[in-house]
Image (cartoon, rainbow, N blue to C red; front, side, top):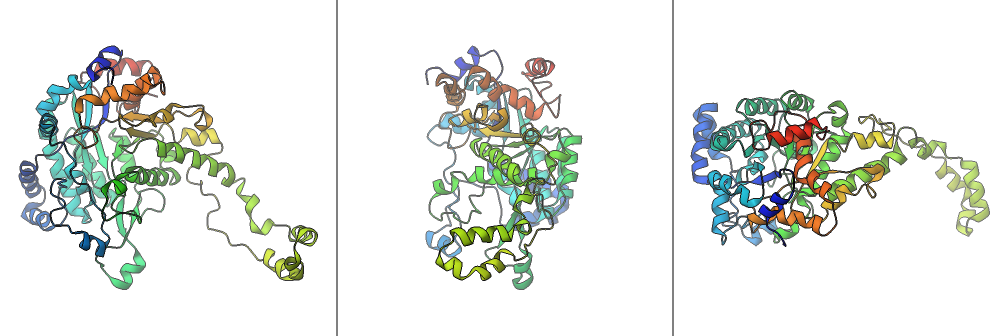
Length: 486
């Protein structure tokens, strides 16, 4: 790195907003506070329910303590995240735990404002007991609201929102906003039983389940939650992985599971939301897909366009089996077929003439309501934002409007990912992101979008007061006045 992060910040004319930083919970203290808050929320019974539930905050330092490879092979359980936080770099490890120290070091990091998400407690979004999960999320949110309140001018935290049931998600969202949260974190999925197996066998161990991504084919109608997000000016962010659910998971190798685990999960969720018509019904709603990069999004956007161009409601008819001219195709069989085809012309005629089957809905894009490729683009690009780490060279793909169809610039947002293993030095993330400019893969305007304008579009587009009272308030207001939030 030719310059430090602080030097990069001094060089550019705009603030740097970190759309996805992390902190690591002080687990013993947080545990006590969760229990206290749970008792206030649901009484001693809810507290005991949590203590008996096997799912607890994820400690990557000790997660392998009771795990054996032979046992993992029997259940084919995925190798989890292990050794996930700094240890040798004691200053960074302390910074991950202590908000006051993080606040003090932000200038050294070249970051003006950071949107933080937890580490150990993200896994609590996977609690299958819907009522317990909702209570636990509210208990955790109370703790984070208290812990981070003194640092609100430069740091904010995303509240945990349980997604097992939309009614409980709506309740938790309102509760979070009332506590002062401006951001929220949802899971990318809810685990659902497969009805046929459950009806025949009851509860199985290990669990057999499918993933519900809240849009297409969802168990529930999540529109009340999306409506609440719009009403309360909250852009939901997703930070999940399929590393524990992928059919091709490894029982022995975390790197195998981690590579593209987040991207695969986010692609499934974005695809479900889009084809489920969520961005059509809620055009002002913004979603953040954090830490998975943007390459998958470029592929999804291109794939959606390519499929729509061939399989839209107008053009799908060209593939209708009943429109096949059997007499005409048989003339080609007669003129160009081999001996086997000529001998079996009558059987082939019957095969070509068999009646075609058709789905209940012929238009796979019916819920999206698009009549042109550019309309599809405009229901994808402004609604979806993609968190990218500083060392990701494929950020450049987001801004390459010569490659992305119909001149699209996808909305990549800078996520430092501080406090996790992939950031061995917290002071280096902004300077590493600046290397995209130094290497010529993006220009300075693209860098501005990456670290400033796109985070504004994600959060302030829905909530113009999102950055009010922060150190970036004036710069954000100027950008909004110039129309850069659109």
